[in-house]
Length: 107
Image 1 (cartoon, rainbow, N blue to C red):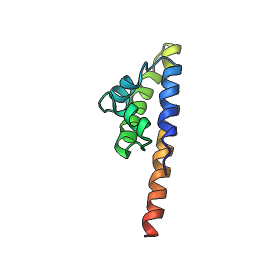
Image 2: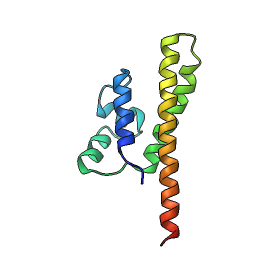
Image 3: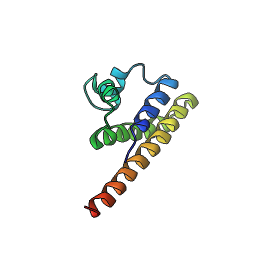
């Protein structure tokens, strides 16, 4: 099962590098949801949907490739962080899909 810590980890990393200021901003800009989405799933102990993980992975990939090509070293470094986070998000999605397939086969 995909742990929601991966979303929390990505949120924390984006805050650490000053690319996200709040859970509301993360919900809207990074997850493609309304501003209370991230707070709500955290408070209820719910797992983010696959669609939310796909939105996040796509955003990280798009910005990572774009910023990573910059001639400005600081901007390129942020792009590389985005790509690292994209990889982690993608790994979590693939793990979730694999475990779901295994569980489906045992039903």
